[in-house]
Structures are given as C-alpha cells and as structure tokens.
Length: 493
Figure 1 (cartoon, rainbow, N blue to C red):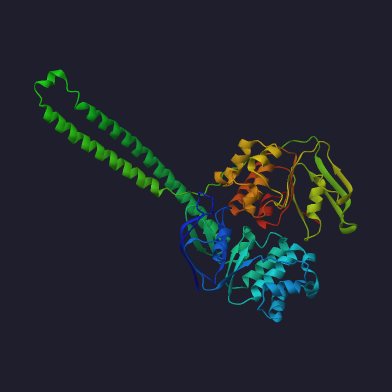
Figure 2: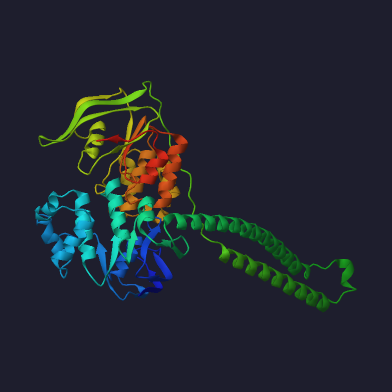
C-alpha cells in the first residue's frame, strides 16, 4: 500500500515561515523507513499531520490508521500489563507476550506499576503494545532517547524484524541496523533513498558537493550578468540624454525629428538588452539551491595547573539510603575524553550532578582540583522557559557568540523571537549545548548532549571536539559519536 503526500502546505499559526510548501512524496507502507532532517524541518510536525492533529492544505492519503509512539500513559501507577492493554485494546494477550519475548521483557515486569520500570523498560513495553496491533501504521518518534547502547541494539534488531513503519531517529548506528529506506526532509526538497543511513549520507554528501559547485558557477554568472545589466542601464540613460543634447555645430545639419527617432530606437534596443539581462539573472537565481551548510563550531578551553582534574575512589551512588552502585573508581586527566556507561538507573546522571555540585548522591573519596571551571549540559530540557534574552542574561553569555553558534547549527532567526517553551526538544538541546560552548572551561560535563539533536549537528559537534580537544566527561549512547570522539575506554559502572 502507498502513503501518498500531494501538495502538502502547512504553517503554524502566528508564524510567517511555512513548515511545508507543496510537498509531494510517495512512500510504501511496507518499508522500514527512517525519517531524517535538521531540527525544525518538520519531522514531528509531519507525524502530527498524518495523525490529523492539524488542518493543512493538500492531501495525505494513508490507507492505514496512523498510530503515534510514544503513547500517552494517563495513569503510570497502573500495572504494566494494564498500560499495554490500553495502548493495544484489540490485541490478544498472547500477542503481547510474543512481542515481549522478542524484546526480552521478563514476565514479572507485567505485574509491576508502570512508573517503577526504568525509562528503557517503559520504551520496550510500549513498543510491544504498538506492534501487537494489526492494520495500523506505526509512527515512531525518537525511541532511543532513554535506551543504553545494549538497549538500542536490541530495539534495532526488533524493528528490523518488522515490516512497515516510519521512524524518526538521529542515531546513525541505530538507523543502519533497522531501516531499508531513508526519507529526508532537506532544505529545499524531500528525498527518498533505498538503503540504510550510510547509503543516504553518501548520496547526500555527493549531491551537496555537486549543488555547492553548481551554486558557485551560478553566482559567478549572476555577478557577470548584473554588471552587464548595469552597463546596459547606463547606456540607456546616456542615449535618453543624448536626444536633448545635440552639439550646436550639428543643429543646422540635423533634423530634430531624425535625432529623436534615432534616440528612441537606441533607447528601445538598450531597454530590451537590459530586460534580457534581468530575465537571465532571475532565471539563474531560480536555479540556486539551498545547500545544507554544516558550519564550523568553536570552543575556548582553559588550561589547569594540575594534570588530574577529578579523582573518584571507593565511591557509591545512593538514593534515599538505597545503594544503586558502588565500588566506583575513575580519574579524569586533562585531555581525556571519556564516556560514563552503565545500565539505566545505575546512577550516571547522579554522578555528573555531584561533580557539578548539584547533589550529593555520590559519596566516598571524591577529589576535585581547586579552581576547576566546569561547563555542564543537563540531560533534561523541561526547565527552559522565558525568552531567549532572559536565558542569555541569566547565564551571562556573549550574545553575539551564542547566536552565531546557534545559527551555525541551523537555528533560524525566527526561533530567537519565540518563547523557549515553544521550541522543539532538539532546538532546546541546541540552546543548552551552545551555552556550554560559549563558556570557557577546564572540564566539560555533558549528560546525553545529543538527545533530539539532528545528525548534521552531531557531526558538527564531533568535528568541534576533535579540533579543539576539550577535556570531556559525558554520558551518551550514540555509538558512532563515542567511537569518533573518545580518547580512552569508557568508565563502566
């Protein structure tokens, strides 16, 4: 069956910039389809339009019922089995059990309150409910945000065994493992490529390089035509003046009517020449493509007099008197770029917060070098509120630098005027990252900095880290990102 999108146009109320303008695409509902694109390109908006949440111009023809993931859970205190049954009301229990077996969810999880499960377990349980349903088209939005590396591999293999879904994800390894087609929302068009993410990226880079070279040729042509048009306009003006300024020595010999006719003829020729030049310029400008620019990010690091910045020995993480992890040992030296890894709920975020002075969940021998400046990116974005100006003032940021970093990460100027609560999760995360990059520091501590961040921005951050070599301690589950930036084996809890 075909999912057909024809002449789709949509603009949010109060915005002057369309999210979609005459979008046309045909997709097969049997494909394992990955939807990619920069933050703000309309990926989640497209899913909402397919769910008929907003009115729009054009046609979205989908023969199956679209179902969005993640589901809303009205009462998370209910048993997990009841939550799954509510999410898949027509699915028999045996089908739920079949899906659970594939995702390796234990039976005892069914009879625990849903809110006592880890975020990763909750994701898996809701995925089971999604695929236990029949005759629906799954719209899966960022399923990996609460999954560790092992969980991502397990879910990717699970999705690879299914037929027919639309998946929004920015994790390259995850996409490579489970999709067979890529649907990309580009700057000036939409594109479908058969294959995994790497196949799409290769074609995208090749196309981008071609369009970049073509744009440069067109810009040179436009510059030449503009100069020619300027000269034609100048000639036209001189001809027009000429019919009123005949030399006195020629007055007796020339007929004024002849002079006027000749001037009019030359004026017409010059104006036609000017119009031809202007039409040629317009045609060339219409051919210019909006090439995806991946600008360079910059970072200022500080040098500390001590080589070892943090030392943790014989430590543990405790919540409400309950030890969740112990025998924690690691050192962070200048120049290290290292990931903190462990199962969901092992205390990774708590360790980072303790090192930043935000809690005291980590106890034991914890030594932090005197005078150490830390730049921190929190995992959550829900605390962001107010205006961009408020955020800049509160964090005492260099406004010019901060906005330049955001612009380089494809943050449109229109977004600067919006309240922070109106921004997407990816845009909010970019704000937190940009604030950290604006802050000179000895040590950067980032807690899942890439959640919701688009692929091209991830590549920008990779390039930044490899170029400026900051000392970095992070929690992150993007396997390719970690392989590209880390200088040593992860710290395992």
